[in-house]
Image (cartoon, rainbow over all chains, first blue to last red; front, side, top):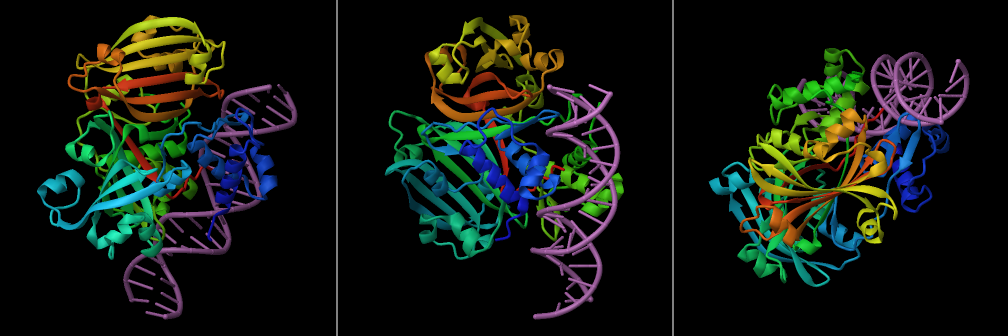
Length: 245
Length: 245
DNA sequence: GCCGATTTGTCCGTATGTATC
DNA sequence: CGATACATACGGACAAATCGG
């Protein structure tokens, strides 16, 4: 396992924040203290801290120190953040997850599909529709369109498990960058048919494009969620770059 | 203005990506070439690149180079990303923006409000409700609750303009970290009263907490959007290369 | 398949600047 | 004012991935 030194430090500090060794509101040891503790350079400590800062765990204050601002969330609904597979999210939220494949076909990208997804016209793709169950309740309708040349050997059987596990572990693909858009839309007839919406007539939608390590967009996907099972978290840090306006 | 060297390099490369000096899909000059161009160390170049990577502009490939993956979006709806004020977003989307204050009161945090916002019971706060207009159409219902001790001199007049401009420019406050949650909810009677929802009966909701440079949470806020005027963008990178020297 | 050149990734030590107390 | 702590920047070293000969 080629884990960088900074990653181990990052994980260790993160753990200590989560288990309240470093409680909310307190200051972390100084960077120089960390260099002694982890026997590394100050740069390496700062690198670990910068990741935690980006994740909203800490906040650095020039001349003062580094404060813990992480607070565990007690919300029990389905939360989403980072690049995470459906089953990973389910496990983190302590829910039982199932997947049912309702569509798995080959397609050639036509004009309409190209406009929607960004794939060039003529590109062979896999078109997959799946229903996601949480605690035996259908709550997510997933559409995935994969560039066929990038995902050889993909089958419905794999789709019913975890496609991403297959891509990463079996094909050795590195999934690197993902661009997503979040909206809310009126439920379509298909949504109502497959998702147990109860009294709701709308869905939360994530639409995304995924790029692999070769820089090619290999997937377009859309997840249509039951509103009660949709919680998207985001942490932003202002970087004081263009104050001049 | 104490702009760091890495910030200038970052801005320059970003601009050249946006104006297609470095077009989509091509590779940037190598890091060593950039050190010659900008007369700086390789670390400084890498720092600029790491920001662009985090923003989804580029993607680094070990042993190969750095590829441009930025594509301007042609969507005309109201988009949101990063920490940005309402008027900034409106300007970026070429829309005319107005704000009307419908509530501006002092409150002491009670038990119910504390549970909702995270402010301790007994904290004096400003409670503000505003309607946001885009091209003269009411489309966003904003609730802001500020810790009174952190925003002295806040008035309804300021609230009708830009509160954040006041905080940053007049009070000299540095807004640093913001945690947000995105959901979709059934429209309340208040939503229907103030937002021109037309045929929609639901809203997109951003709920957030904002921390200033002293690490105190000074604001809780919630924006309830007309679904057609809500587009949240996000870019995630699986690999962390946050070089913060 | 091997080798060397190129390119990015990780880590270090040091120096200096700036904010806080 | 000095001590402490974070911020920026430099230069060097070596590892790992890629690619062409």
